[in-house]
Image (cartoon, helix red, strand yellow):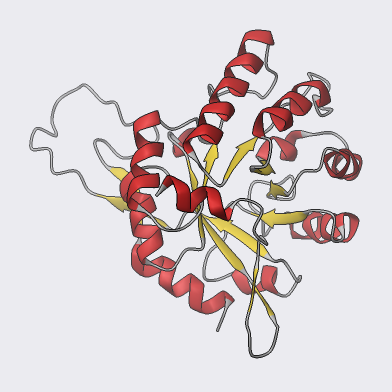
Length: 266
């Protein structure tokens, strides 16, 4: 399977139908586990962004999770590389760690990596990002939602184009993408054909057509649903669930992925 994934590197990041040559929208599902990733593929997802700790904005998934997905799946897998929660201002050791993780992903044959770094004043950390890009080599290179904290998003797009970034994942610097849709539209115009703006955060069946109407070529969502815990002792005072209801967890829903796929490409 690693060979199949590697063969996809450099492929056109969206799809065109043979009959009408109409650009169809690529559906990327943010998967927080191997099970979520497999469910997403079953629902018709075109690509996976694999991560861990989605409820905290996502962190780097385990090596075993990455390798298992590569072994069991047939669609491209992009891996979020984020060594910790919190801000996106990384010290020298963290930058080295991110580069090492990128190099491992490249060695294993993933389709791409999803990374980002900022300076304390809200500018892009171009020095760190250049190192990430060098480590990524031919892999698809996505700048993640650290973009939504940068102080000058239009300048940042120009800088990311110069860096030869493929994708920018953004909510338009708002809590949800529908709230930030005006900026997302402006970013699409700014980027032109130099990179793809990929909306993400809070996208669902009730608002997804608004993004399709913008002419986006790729879209990002988790399509997750809450899985109720099978654990019997729910009265224990110990709770590891964080923001999730006690002992429950979230997982990508295959049926919901299918519904979204039909909405964006009827």
